[in-house]
Length: 141
Image (cartoon, one colour):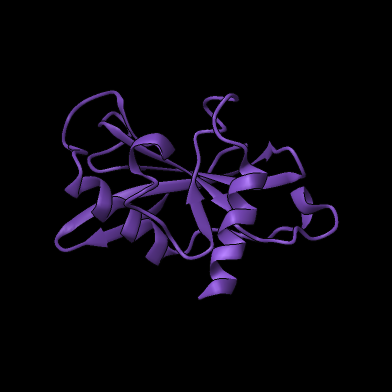
């Protein structure tokens, strides 16, 4: 099945992007994870990749199937803008610039999502713990 490429403009520049729904297993539940990929000068240019962990909690029954979290164009705009400010060079050919949890999660977040490395690295921090901690922080505010 083909994945639809969408287009977004930031200033005078056009980017194409796609988002794929995945799921990651945590210690307490299964969580929705959206892999966002973007390109600045076509699919042969350096890709940008961000894996977004849904912070929906408590997880709905059948969380992997029922969580409807999906990034809006404003979320993709924020991802691209942050990445360009932090080293992504979309005009380069080949390779992938990853907004990793380890390097970027302390400085970057989106409403409803956290960066995660769990899709790429199964040993990365437990998504259930991170989602619960995010939910507790929201309730303290």
